[in-house]
Amino acid sequence: MILERTKNEILIRLPANMDITELQNMLDYLDYKEKTANSKATPKEVDELAQSVNEKIWTKFKAQRNKQ
Image 1 (tube, helix red, strand yellow):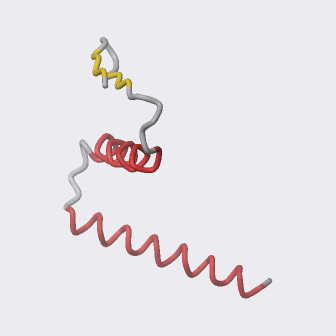
Image 2: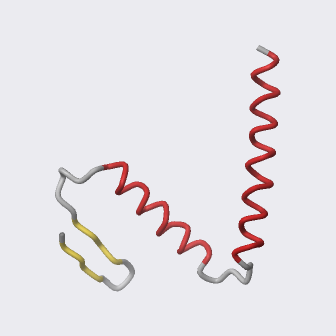
């Protein structure tokens, strides 16, 4: 693994035989950290929002499945 810092980025070079699923999970976590770095929301507020969004998505998904 090679870690390199440039003026605008941090580059990580990994061997091609890395488990893609685990790598994607890590990238998703880093994306979350980047997007929430300046947030003033509490973890509880974030959890409540996520639960609300998930419920709405599943309700919509179920409604679409029932129409088929």
